[in-house]
Image (cartoon, rainbow, N blue to C red; front, side):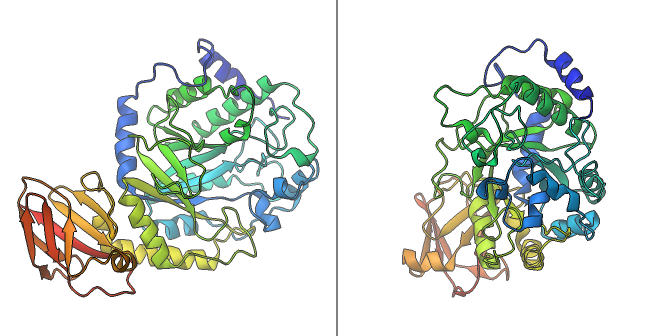
Length: 444
C-alpha cells in the first residue's frame, strides 16, 4: 500500500466536525447556487461506466453476481490494456451528442480505481500494464472542449477488508471488516485527490448507500465529514447521492435511477421529488457496464422521448454508455449519440435552459418554457391514446397574451384561442413516426 498522505490532510481538515449522518445546519453557498443554476440548464449529460469489469463483458456487478473471490478478481487488472482508448474521440462524440457534461466512474463497487491514487496500489496506473491515468486524460479533454466533468464514486467496496459488510458482495469470500475507520480515511483521501488533481469538478455522484438499508440500526456513513470536505475543497462542487431517499442535508441535486422524477416505475425511490435540481440516470441498452450479449438498445425515438419527458419534469437526463475493454465506445452507442446530436441541433432551443414549472405533464406530452416562449412536446403515440381530436387544450391560465402559435420546425402558423381557462390550439396533421412534435407558443 502507498502511504495515505491525503488521509492526514483530511483528518486535519475535519477535526472539528460533529457526528451526524448529514451536514448539520447546511446552507448552500453562492458558488453552489450558481452551480445548481448551470446544472439545471444542461438538460443532457452522458454517464460512463468503465472499469476492469468490462473485460468479462457481464456488466459492472459481475464480481457480486458471479461470486468472484475477492483475491481472484483483482487479477483482471493484470490484463487490462485499453489500447483503443482515446479521450479526444470520447469527449468529441459526447459533445456532438448535445450533452453538456460527463459523469464517469472513478471507482465502482468492485473497488478498482480508474485514476492515479496514492491511497492504494489497486488502480489503473499501478496495477495494469496500461499504466495511464484515464481520468486525467478525460479531465484535460473536457476542459479543452468545454464539457463539465462530474465524478461517480462508490461508497461501498466488495474487496477491501475494512469496508463494513452490507447486503451485497457477500459471496466474494471477503471476511468481516478489520477497522472501518481506515476505510473512511481511505475514502476521504481519495475524494481529496479527485478534487485537487483534476481541475474544476461539477459534481461528486455517490452510489452505495443502499448497501446498508437492511441494517437494524441506521448505518453511520459519515456524510457530516464527507460533505463538508467536498464543499471545502471545491466550494462550487455539487453533491448528489443515489440513495433513493429524500435528499440528505448537504446534498445539492436529487438523483432518480432509471426513473423520470415522480413516476417511480422501477420501484426503488422511497422519497418525494424535492425542489433541488433533478437528474434521471438511464441506460442506453439494459446495462450500465459493458455487457457483450446486451444488444437491446433503445431506439433513437425512445431516447428522444425519454430526454424530452425528463426535461418536461424539470430534470436532466444522464444517459449511460458502457465502453468496451479495449477502450472504444460500442458502435451502436456511437450511432445513438450521433442521432441524438442531430435532433438536439435542430430542437435544442426547446430543451436547453428551459424550465417546466408552469404546466404539469399532460396525457399527450410535456411542456417546457423559457422567457416569452412555451413549447408543447407532443408524443404522437400518447396523443392517439389520449383521443384529443383536432383541438389541443393547454391548461395554462395567465394574463400574458398569446402572440401566435406555430409548428416549431417549419414556423407554420396555427390557429388558436385563448381563454381564462387556458389555450386551445387547432392541431395540424402530426406524423405518427416522429419522436416529438413541437408546437411553439409565443407570448407578447
